[in-house]
Length: 288
Ligand SMILES: C[S@@+](CC[C@H](N)C(=O)[O-])C[C@H]1O[C@@H](n2cnc3c(N)ncnc32)[C@H](O)[C@@H]1O
Image 1 (tube, rainbow, N blue to C red):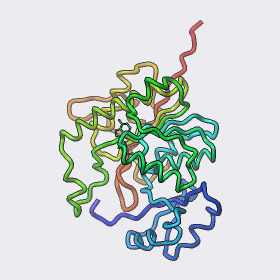
Image 2: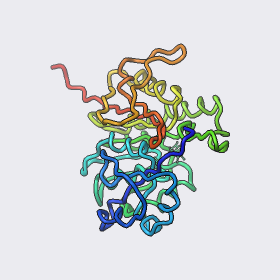
Image 3: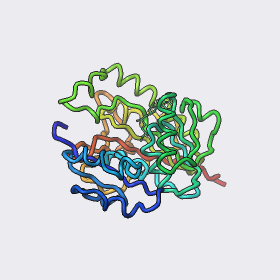
Image 4: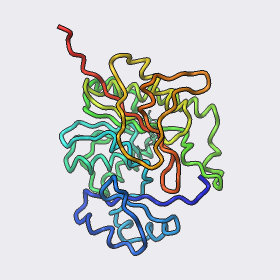
């Protein structure tokens, strides 16, 4: 976490001529083999990227490679009804819109008003104005749209431990154990809302950029305890360099064996720390 981190970026696929955009950059960059149109360049070229014509024209979205993983794990199909329950600034909403194509049925929710408008602007300026946006509390969505969506992403607000840098006190000055506990409470409610909003047979992906087991495995365990036989956790097959399995115990808490199907991404020279878990809401067939 002390070393300079490569800069991840995606060429916006919803805009015409996406294939040529990367060729206009005049510094070295490398493609990420698991996502078309995704790249990294060296930290020393960050400013060249941000000053490039492609970036200023809105053809490029800067996004850490770890943050590109949750939409891939959600695997939306073009005809799905998709909900992004904590959406601003819109990195993953945009990625979902690109994966599903123009006109896709996507609802994006953001609680904080200023961040909501930022989300709207970002979607409009990157070819995804067709996404429906709502300035609402994601925890309440379950009341209005129970069982409505095929897939739900909850990229939860968190203590952002994965973005801390030892050389940048402002990246960790907000941190406290109390903050971790407060976020964990919010995350449990948002994940419950996500699971209640998805149809039987549908998929929910939960992600954070925190290391804290309280915000990750313990939140997943809480969902298993709350929903019992109605949900399960599915394995994630993506081959990623720094992936490791989720924890099975933390302090005095033991977790269900299924929790280890979730993935922890450890930080390295390209990836920020991330946690990703894929739930399936089960369709209960009648025993007779
Ligand atoms: C980790 S960020 C989301 C990042 C976003 N998914 C992306 O990839 O660009 C979490 C977001 O959730 C918002 N948020 C916090 N509490 C919320 C709630 N109860 N309902 C909806 N959004 C909430 C925060 O304001 C923040 O914008």
